[in-house]
Length: 495
Image (tube, rainbow, N blue to C red):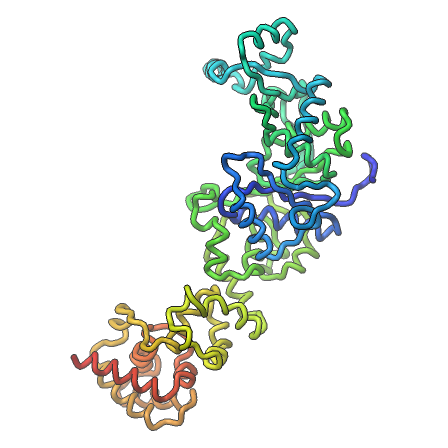
């Protein structure tokens, strides 16, 4: 093991709570920790903070693991893998926390606080009115044995508080530089509830110490808790818990949503499930999330995770808030889609070609027809789920009925144009080039350029004004089905 004065192999941790659906801010934190560990040839410890029985659930735990696997993250210690510091679920480490709390009490680093919630609220309110810091005022810090006995006799319950040092705490944040917190702004804090349950403020640093974590990379919202944790790490070292090394900290910038507000779990665009259900590629989503505070180069937004790992340094992260831009996220994903090998793209589309996404009968799906148009679809999709609407005309008995598209394309004169196009299509060789020439000729007879001439044909055949290249689509759809759909549209126009 490295000493407290020599560099230690990088060990970082990702420690989410299994509460609800994973969100993109959580994924960004996981990504930066993963990339940092891989860049330095270090260890990524994945542990589960599930001490809050009221909020944590086994379903969320399983969903979290499934989401990380989908994103392609791997970890070196943690659930499903194990490791030298197992178990990696805090709910299975309660005896460890109880023993550490006992040692902190015995050593004087912690004490029992008998203040009631009402008393605390009253004193905080008085402090605020007087312009003083409203944190805990240390009333129970130096209770005598007689005072403790009196509180016990009254039947008062107690929490365990950590005794903060009476001097400033300074540390160098890997993202923000040197920071100093004055003691009046970092009061003593609770580490064990009255019922004996350990709090996050205890279990997180204890696990870091025991698991020999060297770097803590986490969100800016946790910055205010850092001086408390540093003091606790030092106390743990004094009582012989862990390696004696205080981790280095790097606090990642906020991710902002609409209206200059921090992106929250309640914002629809924050849900990881949204991106998975829409068919974002993990590589595309992670590429975009990496840009929320970091960049590979000023003039380059598109890169692979291997390239990120090769270049990533936490000191290169920008401390300024990062704005989440869904349009840019989609554009980056679209680029990753276009760069896939066609065979991989076809395989990735598979879930959206079946129920519940596909609106056609399963037996109507034709693999050869899909494969023929897949390369064209690949150049146009933003997300994989777009594939369904792009190819449904091939497998539905009739094209979708989109009233807005119909009104836009079937303007006065559309009937005559469509009739001429039908005649020329019927006699054309059935390949994209000949079909284009047929519609172009029909348009010329009616004084229309190709763009205007092909619109009624596209809507008649596919139901929509936009889609895959029309003439390649007609070639795959075939002569019989194409002409039948044009005939149906002509009947509708004459009613």
